Image (cartoon, rainbow, N blue to C red; front, side, top):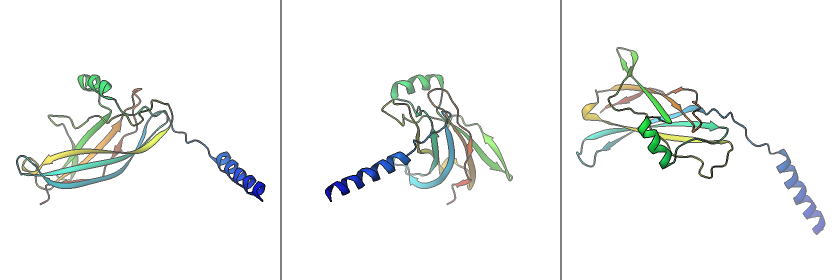
Length: 169
C-alpha cells in the first residue's frame, strides 16, 4: 500500500511539473493602465488640503531589468534619464491639452528584481502625485500618459489613464 501511495505522489508531481511552462514576455516592457485614485489629505506643515493622486499600472518584462538601484539613480538624476515618464493633460473648454510643468512629474522607481537574475517579471507599480488645493484650479480635470524604461533603454508602450478631477470640494 505504501508503494502505491508513493507512486501516486510521484506521478502527480511529475504530471504537474511536466505541464508547467515558464512564462515568456518580450524584453521590451509592456504596461497597462490599472487604476487612478485620489485621497484628500492635510499637509502636516501648512494644514492646507492636498490631493494625493495614485496611478497604478500593470507591467511585464521578459528579462526583468526594470528599475534602478541608488547608484544608477544618481547618474539618471544627473542626466534626467527617467525610467517612469509622465505626460500630463489638462482639460480646457472640453479639449485636453498637454501641461508643461515647471518641475517634471517624471521620476524613478527602484529595482523590481534584486537578485540580478535575468528572467520574466510582472506586477504592478504605484506612482503618486501631490497637488495642493490652494494652487490647483477648482474641479481641475487631468489625465496622464505613462511610459516606462528598462535599464537596457527599451521603452514600453504608452498608456493613458482615465480622467481624474482635482480640488472638487
